[in-house]
Amino acid sequence: MKGETYEQFVEKFKPKKTTDACYTPPEIYKTIRDWACKEYGIDPDKIVRPFYPGGDYEHYDYPDGCVVLDNPPFSILSKICEFYLERGIPFFLFAPSLTAFSSRKTVMRVCHIICDASIVYDNGATVKTSFVTSYDDGIIVRTGVELTREINRVSAEIRARTVKQLPKYEYSHHVVTAAMIQKYARYGVDFQVNRGECTCIKVLDSQRARGKGIYGGGLLLSDAKAIDHAAAERAAAERAAAEKANAHVWELSDRERDIIASLG
Ligand SMILES: C[S@@+](CC[C@H](N)C(=O)[O-])C[C@H]1O[C@@H](n2cnc3c(N)ncnc32)[C@H](O)[C@@H]1O
Image (cartoon, rainbow, N blue to C red):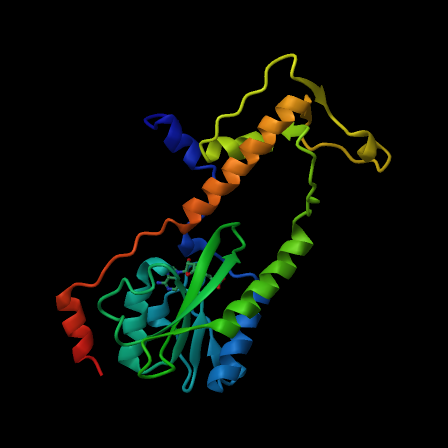
């Protein structure tokens, strides 16, 4: 603690969630490996994984005919791609989805397979993951439709096994919970309940018979307040929909259109 701020002291005890320390669940790795082997005709026995704690990919002993299929540290991904391209070692590597094109040095020399796949790594971090490969020569980017589907299918299976699923309940507008009011606050909807307009409730009679209850407790509202509540819920839903639709479109300049016209 000496010489440290409180934040620095606390930080040391937090599990590391940087993408460089994201370990791949074996089932997810197998799904990706199987897809790549089928897609590119890779022999699974030729695959090597040089990225591990204390590893040194630059001095790894790469057997003849090997293929690197691994999740590397994203912070040096561009350097890693250059290393393999220069040595003619074929590779299929995990990459961060949103910044997949950020390396000027390698972006035009590899194929980016962009997926909409959120992988939950072993350290608990959820990272939108795509891939870069030396296969698909001549293609700069393609969608990974089947790969996305497969990763998300296996991720959902893992989640279903590990996360205790909370049942989804619908309530009458005569019931309000803190979770509902939290959503109204997020979407800027004013809503208030005064003493005399509600009573606190933990379980509805219909739930009691089935051994259920209102998660976190709630308030049972008067008829008039239930009408206000319905209006608040509608307003929040409308604002959520408007927020989703409110995307800004960046236009292309004439210069960029000329560049596009010159491309094959
Ligand atoms: C994102 S983790 C993935 C680990 C494993 N390959 C997996 O799929 O679960 C990247 C690993 O690469 C290791 N690493 C960092 N620098 C490296 C280097 N220069 N050579 C080899 N491995 C390295 C890190 O210690 C970390 O264990």
